Amino acid sequence: MGRSILGAFVGLVVAILLVGLVQTLGHRLIPPPAGMDPTDPASIAAAIPLMPLGTFLFVLAAWFLGAGVGSSTAARIARSDARWPGLVVGGVILSATLYNLWLIPHPLWVMLVGPIGIIVITLLASRPHGTAVAGDRIP
Image (cartoon, rainbow, N blue to C red; front, side, top):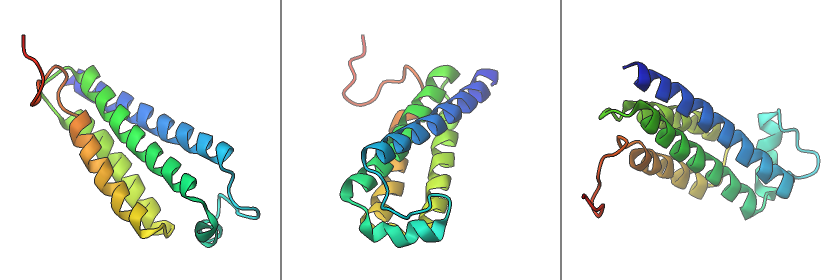
C-alpha cells in the first residue's frame, strides 16, 4: 500500500511537471497573440480564435503526455496489481482539463478529443506493471 501511495504521488508530480514543460515549450515555439494576458481567462478566451492549430496541438500533447507518463510512472512505482495509482493521476489530469475547458472556451474538437484522449491514455498507461496485454509475448 505504501508503494501505491508513493507511486500515485510521484506520478502526479511527474504529470504536472510534464504538462507545464510541454505547454511552456509550446508557448515558446508558438507565442500567444499580442496583448493576451495569460493570467486572465477572459483575455485568453478572446485570443482563442486567433490561435493557430499548433497551439492546440501542444495543449493536447501536454495533457496526453502528462496523463500517460504520470499514470505509467505511478504504476511502475506501485509494482502491484492495483490500477488505482495510475487512475488517480489520470483522474487529476482529467479534472484539471475539464476545469480548464469550462473556464476557457476551446474549439469544439479540443473539448471532445482532450478528455477522451486522457481517459484512453490513462487506462492504457495505468495497467499494473508487468501485466500482459493482448499481443504481448508471455515467456
